[in-house]
Image (cartoon, rainbow, N blue to C red; front, side):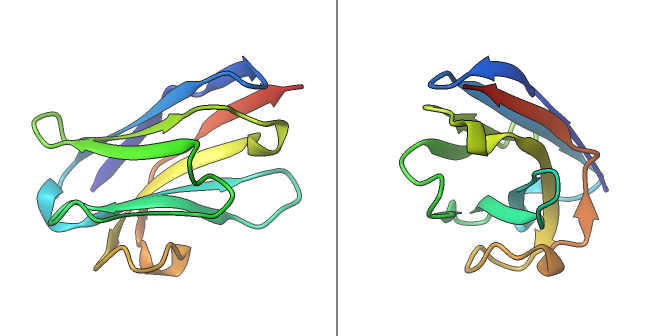
Length: 123
């Protein structure tokens, strides 16, 4: 299993970024893929997930209405479109795979992780 995140960077508050998670080494449409983030000095938190088998999505309350998760089965890639970014969205963002469903976004259910991509939102 290999996950490679990209698309992070520096953006002003109110701006947008789109993160990508390119996946390989497993059957893409059989697993749930999640996005997590970890800010300095804080615990890692679940941001969003998508169940590739049926398209079910879930979002943390802090990002609902601003972030959108989607998947491109042809490219084995999951995206996280982030709009109306706030300074509190600053974190390293990780994608992970392996949970059986998208009922909850908890890192203990995701055994495989990417290396992360930094998102910095300046106020």
